[in-house]
Image 1 (cartoon, rainbow, N blue to C red):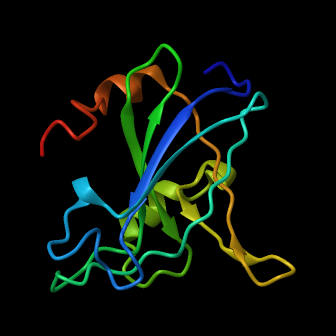
Image 2 (image 1 turned 135 degrees about the horizontal axis):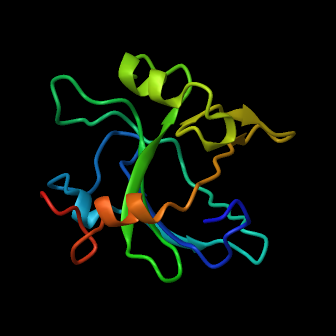
Length: 146
């Protein structure tokens, strides 16, 4: 919030499976099979393990592969922030790339690199912004306009 680490920030993440479905038989993001919650530690750090999501299986022109994320910092409302996207994803729109340019570790476009065992890893930090929290506030855990 003031340039310092933000401990105890709840992060709710969800995405499609490798085949591009949130759930089956109907792909419903509100019932995503691959979802989880993590909290940042005392140093503001967090991590999660998952698979790389697939493109939407039920869309003619699917959006880029992505992982949705909601943040709930202490004393601020639960809110959405830009999804994680992946560097080199062909469906990434120029506007998304332009917005992320220069943000470095705060970019929502993640560069995945393999660790010693071949597991892909990426880094993304967040700025906790009360104005964004208010503007993107969730209602009953979901987007206002859905």
